[in-house]
Amino acid sequence: MYVCCAYYWLLIQLDTDFHSCSCDFVIHFGHAYNHLPGSRTKEERTKHALLHMGPSILAAAVTSMSSAIFMLFCRVTFFTQFAEMLLLTMTHAIIGSFVVYLVHTDTYGPDEPTKFVQSIVTKITVACGARRSSRGEL
Image (cartoon, rainbow, N blue to C red):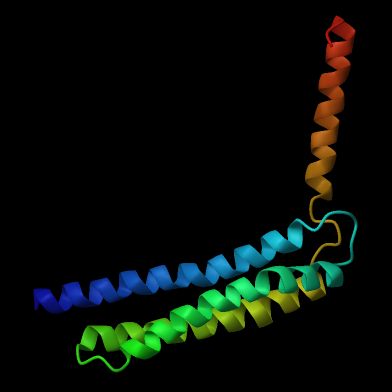
């Protein structure tokens, strides 16, 4: 009984770790979308994210899925279930990041994602510079 509970607890923990891969793919796409310099359209930003991060994300998913394919042929039940979960999770992560997330950034994404933060930084810099100049500091 205890072994069975520990076994399923381990599978649940691994499933949680697998979902972090899906989040990781989306975070990498978002980072590439956000860091394209200048005022660009959301379509250009999405294309940049896809071209610069897509191959790396796809390679990570393919290597994980290829290792899972080898584990499908194991005799130990844990490894076959682990491989099934890994294959399903990577499939969902690829679909979620390449299709769902990129379609949403292309449709609803901001043209200037850092504009708000940059305006705050500029205001703080100007205020600090004015305060220093009034004191006679450099």
